[in-house]
Length: 193
Image 1 (cartoon, rainbow, N blue to C red):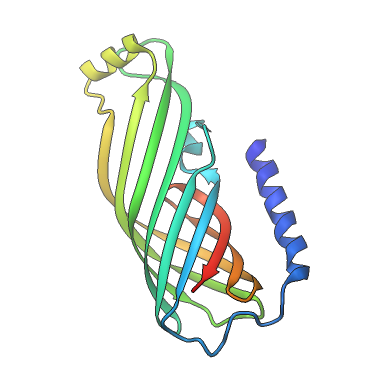
Image 2 (image 1 turned 30 degrees about the vertical axis):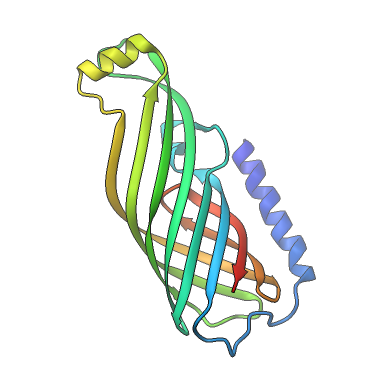
C-alpha cells in the first residue's frame, strides 16, 4: 500500500511540476562532452517478490558522460535494505531476515533526441552485486548454515534499463527508470554539467 501511495504521489508531483517547466530547456546544440548525474530513490524494491519490506527507500546514483549525440557511457551505484520472514532449510518455523544489497558498475545508454522537455533512453548495465543476508534468529541461522546457507554473496550481473528524463529548468530535471539492481523502479533528480 505504501509503495502504491508513493508511486501515485510521485506521478502527481511530476504532472504538477510539468507546468513550471521551460520549453526546450535541454540545449539542442550541446551534443557531446557533458555529464548527466541522476540521484534516485527506489519506488519498487528488488526483493518485492520475496514479500520483503524495505527498511528504507533504496538509493541510487549514476553519472553518464555523453560521448556522442545519442550515446553515453557511465557508472552507477545503489543500496537497498529489506526485511522479511521465511522458513529456512533445517527449520520448521519462519524466521526474520534482513538483506542489505549494494550494486555498482558500468552502463551504456542510447538516448532519443529531445522531445520538448522530454528525453528517453535505454541501455545495458553490468557490475558487481553484493548481498549480505542475515537471519535474525540465532538457532535458525545455525541450522541454515549447517544446510549450506551462504550469508554473503557477491556476483557479477548484467541487466537492461529504460528511462525518461524531464527538464524543469536549464540543466535540472527529474528522471524515472525501470531496471534491476537496487530497485525495479526508481525516480529522482537529474543534473546536467
